[in-house]
Image (cartoon, rainbow, N blue to C red; front, side, top):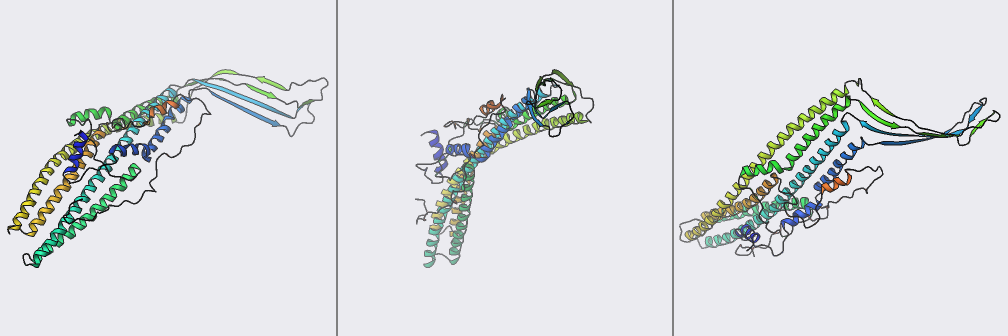
Length: 488
């Protein structure tokens, strides 16, 4: 049997459930969320907006070219003037380029580049968080389906018990108290089944919210890869790969460059420029001077270097520097906070994962022991050594241990995936979702990094995520209960 087959058998074996012949897989759910989840597609759009910060910063260091055409109609003229111009057109142009800006432009560009890197990490974090939520929802549906089936089977067993108890009461073998106890347990089992059904419906609706479509028959998930042997080894990986920590580091670097850029506000700037101008009277010049020939057009141009030396700006530069320093301090502290959170999350996830594995082992032993206990209690009741209440208690304890085992398996898988997410190893490439083209944020950034064209454009965006308004309200259908209380 394959590794996945062993895992499926282990997950489903103790509940009496059979693996579906054709089923949706966890990979299917993750691929659907990767392609259509609105939070993830929105995060990608936000990253594309962050990318534009780099060409915006670079634009401040590039030449600026402008033209200002003006048409003039002289509606009121001096009739006594020797030369009169009725109309004219002027075209003034300006070309300027900074050659020194105190390091402000250079540092602003580097800050924007670091924010792009931080955005890449934040996008990874969003992807990982959504995948963690999808895994949780997927496992919740499997768990709650199993719990519904267990409670349904328990209801069938208790129905059979009540019929048998009533029959024995009719022949005087049991008392009215025994019948009442059986009726009470059946009523309690009915309420527990309804609660389990409501929980299953809720899990299915959350699955639809995250994945974008209704869950089918969900297959047990494959084993999680590359889980660490110790919490220290997990922390070592997390400190290098956790996206939230990487984002905090890049944000701190961006703030450091912002601090340097702020210092440029009180330094001199030097700009080279040229200002060509052209004027044309459009043949409208007239004169009462005999033999005068007017020149209807003129072309002039200036070129030079302009230096700006700030002397006093009302305290603005000092305030900008203090503000940048404060934000740098904030970013430094947030980096340490992110590191603390990553360490705590990784260690806690490791502990939860290991504890859940131990709970699975203990619950498996409890199920075996409770099955043996129920069998013995029923046999002893047949010879008068055990009461009906003893049988009911043994059945309830067996149900509780089975429910605990199902929950422990869900908790172990989710905790293991959460551990991988904390280590920065729960993203599309880590999970083998390369069945289609993966979104490449670096390629999107490279498209605009060196953009210079003022007239470059692209179509307005169209929503890529899917809506769930057309999905049906989920149900937790209950099959008819057979006489033996077992699932068919």
